[in-house]
Image (tube, rainbow, N blue to C red; front, side, top):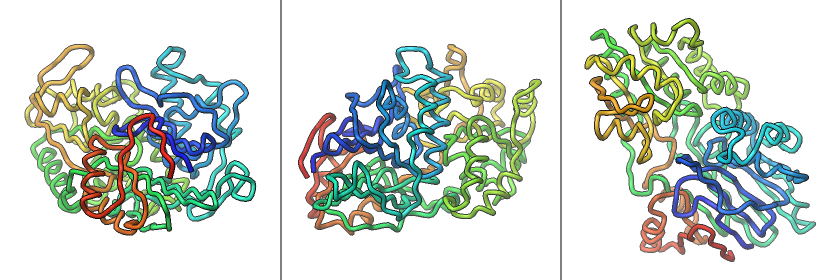
Amino acid sequence: MQVEFLGGAREVGRSALLVDDALLVDYGLMTAEPPQYPVRDPEPDAVVVSHGHLDHVGAVPALLKGDRRPPIHWTPPTGELARTLAEDTLKLRGNSPLCPFGAEHVARLGEVERRHDYSDPFPVAGGIDDGGYEVTLFAAGHIPGSAHVLVDDGETRLLYTGDFHTDDQRLVAGTTARPDADVVVCESTYSDVRHDDRGEVEERFAESVETTLWEGGTVVVPAFAIGRTQELLLVCAAHDIPCYVDGMGKGVTEMLRRYPGFVRDPEALRRAKSHARFVTGRDGQRERIADGNAAIVTTSGMLSGGPAMTYIPQIRSNPVNKVAMTGYQVEGTPGRDLLESGRAEIDGRVMPVSARVEQYDFSAHADRDGLFGFLDSYRDATVIVNHGDRCEAFAADLRADGFDASAPALAGRIEV
């Protein structure tokens, strides 16, 4: 089996792994200015997508140009999220050189998609008996519908972890899947981090928000629309924190309720949705909410657009108010700038923010201990490290612990 790293090697973003020039696993984009896409445009016989985040699925419609129609395999929530993200990309960058697909390519997703449940093997590219593969998806504990992808060609079993978490979140349970594999392509996003206990993080967040509300302030909670928004709605409901939800996360929350088998507690998600108030944005509603006394869970998670950039100018000058960041802030984003400098670029102008700014680690990725714990089941396998800022260093750490581990470079092609 030959694998080629078209993206996601020694970097976070634009994940894309090509197996034998025939099977493509993920095809994402890297959020940057301008956005970056996989290093070349393959023509695979089939595509499997691990989960519905932009860096893993954001470029998939571009595979359907011309007369190309490879079947695309994913779980039902991932299929829904892929379409949502593609439509959002068209709104932001459509009809420009920065977007490699158009509305017609997004429409074709419905023609070629194949939806699968976890632990249900399916043939790809003709199946093992016809020179192809058998593929099985396993719950990865990252977001609803996220999957480890096991690829079996009859001789070699390759496990592509995708993004995963080994600890439980309110929205999804941590992964317990450890399928037999000869080769493991493992993400390493937080390979040098140890997360704080999730319960303690949640308690600190709730106490801080409640204090600000008691003082008469407003809390803006920038959050990724997929996974993080729903997790925070569950937290707010559990602690009886009054909250609004705004941005893409509204539609994602509605969609996930249609797939109860892919969330940890469907009834808790129903209650959380009922507890939150959904923002329409009509007739100056956002301005009135910002002057109120509530938490506002809203996109974008890194303040790079979305309704968050309506709320921040409204609350920025009052030191009683608060901005509670809930995810990693990539260098160069307005969210990172706000954390480091207390200033944010708003409508092209850099403005000081007097409101208190805090950060909470609600990560949906395994940390260093989680990665080692997961890989402990694969000490006899070859481990290939990807999807991280320090892939080479983590591979060296694994070798020091007795693993056969490496971290191929971008565009690297290796035999396994």
